[in-house]
Length: 441
Image 1 (tube, rainbow, N blue to C red):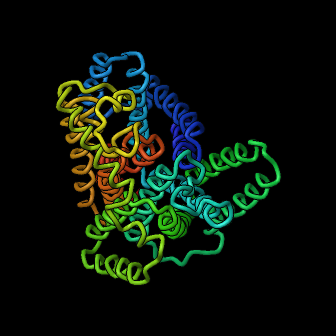
Image 2: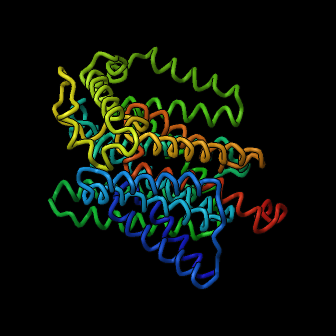
Image 3: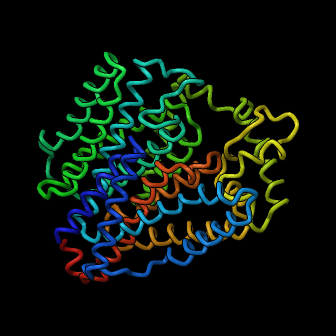
């Protein structure tokens, strides 16, 4: 039991730090995975077969084969090491086999997303990240990564809110995590403004990791505190998303929210539609300016997608190899393309097919279908948030992924893996403890 609580603490620390520091998140993830392995070794837990096993294994094997047949196998295998991140999914499933653990892990993830969104807002209004060419990246390396995490967090927070059955009125202390994050960000901003030292940010990340673990491990008022946190995170992420001017994240968030609302009450879509109408009717300059397909980035996507199709036709079985798109792009670049280089093809489906071949794409689609199917099946077991949250987050990933390779963003992927594990963990709880005990947990 002590190791399980330690594993939950490390998982929560991973979830809370992946929106603010990929290094810290991967350190905590490694500790969670080691704890899980130790529990397996000591027979304190056992592996349970999941619907995702076969497609994920097939996708991983084909990715390694693709790397072996790449023009630079060593570099391709180096890029393929990101497959290790999928271990996080299995760690989360094993850790969250109680309603309390699931709520704790989600609360930690929302706390990290809240910090990211608030930092993005501060950057926009006070630090000069307020133009199309200089958008707020939050704590992350790129504004698209920040917007991708904010979109998935908005959908996750909305699922927690609309599927909550808490009738008790929250107290002021339930808003303590929000207040602490706001205060810590204020101190961090003032400190970084006065000094170029990186230590304030490191201390902030460490404190956030400890706060995430504390949120997950405490038991008193966890649900009410999570509800208040979800409200705050949803509001902050909505604001940050609008300021990000990132269209793929906007689309992903809208479709993800629609998926959650349909599962809760289809008529609630009218509220989402009304909100969008009000937003468009107010004609905010930064939103209206992005409602076009004739800008440079849209045109560039057209050319890179054409190059991607040529890559697939040229290497349909094993593709060019993981991480090889940037090297190969100049040779496939169409005349008239605005940029001579592209790190990726800004589309999940095309990127997977071009990098790893059409068989890998089939396995990837199978994997996504298995994830979505498990989430939908979980929605039949009472009005809990796990199934709708996973379904909404995965919908956000897939829709935004039509215009961005977010599947290759470690921060977005790790946040998604924690959310996508929720329905599998809930099902495992019912299998292990029985329907009656699981419902009472």
